[in-house]
Amino acid sequence: MSFFDLISSDIGIDLGTANTLVFVRGIGIVLNEPSVVATEVGTGRVVAVGAAAKEMLGRTPEDIRAVRPLKDGVIADFEISEKLLSDFIRRVVRHRYLMKPKIVISVPSGITEVEKRAVRDSAENAGAREVYLIQEPMAAAIGVGLPVDAASGIMVIDIGGGTSEIAVIALSGIVNNKSIRIAGDEMNEAIVLYLKKNYNILIGELTAEEIKIRIGSAFSLDREESMEIKGRDLIAGVPKTMKLSSVQVREALTEPVDAIVEAVRQSLERTPPELSSDILDRGIVLTGGGALLRGLDKRLRQETNLPVNVADDPLTCVVRGTGRVLENMAQYSKVLIRSRRD
Image (cartoon, rainbow, N blue to C red):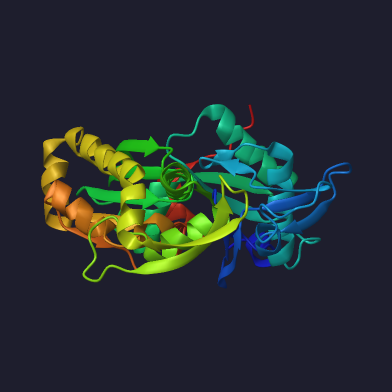
């Protein structure tokens, strides 16, 4: 361990569309906050970041704007992303004045060079000494504790807020990957659209997310459930409540879930036969917040005839992976996309 390592707090970041998680080396996961920033419209001054800003979504007066700076897993608003990162880094780094931290950030596997540079620049401007990027499915596999450097194949499906990443990993590399921009956010949108189209009731994004978490499913449940929801009647223009069942929510989620299943199928078709037999033995590992959608593992099992396992605490797999990489940079050097200055 070098002198620099002793005086700097190196951190791993899972910069997600929905949530950002931060891991500090030697401590563990220290922060898990929504990726939302609220700013003043005229001045651009930051009013709130994280959970406090998320509560403002859909509720702000004209002079305050609450935004999610990441769209589909990549930076959509550069300035705001920088504010989000610097706020989170400031919260977790102790001796900032002594030494800037080394940062490992996870990115979607389908990311372009321009998008990579945006992530790097944001992290450097937010106070990073060195920036390393790692692909999300690789970080998730390392976080679950899978032997990514072995010759046998591993299949990981990481369903986040903005992207679903499907990757087959062997020998510290991604053999084939499919990254689709359909994930948790699209599921929320599908619920909003379903209610609008079929019941003329308009609900907000936060309500849709709550419905998905409480009664959403991808496979018929042993006991179907229901909940009261509140929204605005589009015809009368007044607030309205209605009872929604898990069967209706499953119908609403058909399209995004089908798209994820289809992407998994395509990924399996493109997998070399030797690795396919490894996947048959070991199964598919589901990570990310989307893995918590009830019955998704059953649905994938039914469609692929392969064993499908949901990782323990799927929400933190990626950030735990970045933490493991930080703690053992030499072992995992092959999996990192090194920060290049062009």
